[in-house]
Image (cartoon, rainbow, N blue to C red; front, side, top):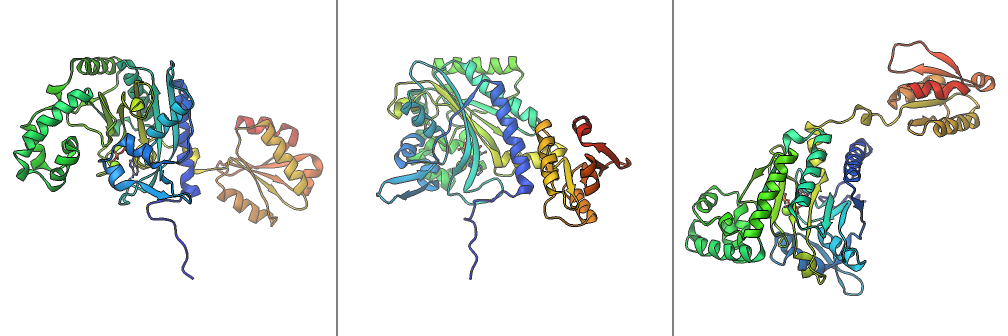
Length: 422
Ligand code: ATP
Ligand code: MG
């Protein structure tokens, strides 16, 4: 019979990789806790309209990338391609946005029907950070500082670069869009195929084009900067001043636009040149109009999402990975002979006394020699040996597996002290 395999672009994470994932997740959680952010969780599926209305009908995500299907009632559901829309939906539904500010985060799988390749998958993971009720540039700066601190803690700050831009108000962007479309329509024959298509559907995305001729054409055309409204321009200037003050390095990229419709004013991306075409590791911006667009009261909002697979790839090639991650076990307790009950009890008392210690107890019997082999393979630094004699005497043998030290015998009552120092 043909074996059933995982869905293309949806990866299993095996034990050899999950330690690094847990490390990344815990650094992220610690950083967020240090900034006073709270976790929010929402389902991985929503009504399809939520994403259509928020992300925008003529975006890559909604046009080509969503996993949409009808449930048994004929209702159209979609696996979430991102978290912002769900976050707004959940906050509105539970009254979290009324007269208050929120600083929130979530972490979990997202789904997009894309061509799988390194750094691009159909099920991938994001940590999303969203704030509500704050309109000044100080919160934008805080978010960028937070992301910078995170890259520093991971040892990745040297291989990512922050690019920032202002998209201006809706009106400013609409005026710029008209000017851009006028300019490019007259030169349509010089555009690449993708950009020609976007000229009608989503002209601002042309700024993203990787095509050199198109970029040259844009150089000579109208610039978004010249169309910014006064307030947006001030907001942006203040943001860059705050980033300077906080010591967060950045580049202004006037061509930076985001692939989702809901952004206004601040837009940013952390990019890397280490992952080929998958250059964005973190992206976000301000979306002051989205809450109202989804039926709530106008609420200023700014947030971003980090792609965890891309950070894992960077960590594997560039970052700090604690050495202990490759060893899931500190201490291996060998139980030789008829001592299973004593071994279970001893293991339990050590774990109670030293909750941070990673202790694996041998199961399955076998000779002293075969148990020591397993101890060595486990990666443990110390093997504790409990035989029938030791058990009777209330002692345990201590063998150092990674150091050139003689084996010793220790009273079980003194073990906590010995292991605690280790
Ligand atoms: P890209 O330009 O690479 O398609 P995007 O603009 O579609 O990215 P966002 O919607 O802003 O990405 O999502 C935020 C982050 O999530 C990205 O910066 C990236 O790190 C990650 N990401 C997006 N799509 C994928 C995917 N298919 N596989 C893995 N990570 C992804
Ligand atoms: Mg994309």
